[in-house]
Image (tube, rainbow, N blue to C red):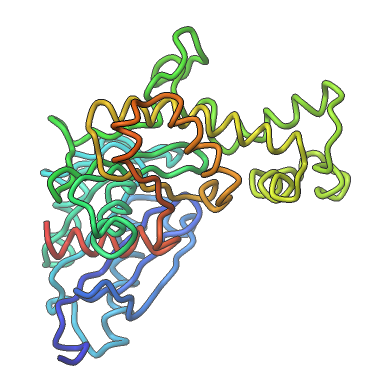
Length: 322
């Protein structure tokens, strides 16, 4: 079967910096890509215009038309009513409250549209074509600026009563912990990118020795989670302790998830997950301390496989199979 005869969909990953788009076939292969600076699509109308233009350019590269698509899938960073394609609110993207995005896109494109939370879209990609494809029950977690989560149960995304289930980043891991608009002691208040850097800087201010400042070119403001990961891999004691703390926080949340849902695997993606053994080694150790051996033996912790393409592949897959 030629690529042109395969089912196709366009996947859209609505990021705070870029809108990433891809033409994806039913095998999960990306056939064409586009990237639009989010700043160039500041209003809702401008965003829809930009996405339509991008989609037309993508299908034209393969001598297709919009009407040939199985659909268009969109992953957005916020709360979504999946059934209605309704966006309640987007994190860190102003001007996107109470938006009937799905119906507006269907009117514009004339094809099937699916709108979902971006982490649900990533989970769909990973569980169909990536690290989760061998599991019926899996939990997907992204570690970056915040912490996102998605639940795959019986080979289907579980969205809850109002399509907002899976918010692992807001699960409380400390009884009287850090307060945020989402609650008290939420996981992402301890392991989000900014919090990881803050922890390292606090330890440095207390006089701890470390190679971090040297690696940052002498500028503490240049310290990032990636730099801390690199230092930890090279044996920097302070950086190792930072990632051990991150792993302990994740283990606290993951153990609760494991006891509640008993997934076969927890699949971890996002920038912080790229730390590899620096993170996953202590994470497995702390999980083993918090879970019954019966649960530990039946739970795999895996790194996501699709990287930055998980969002667009997953969004396109939503349009094809949901």
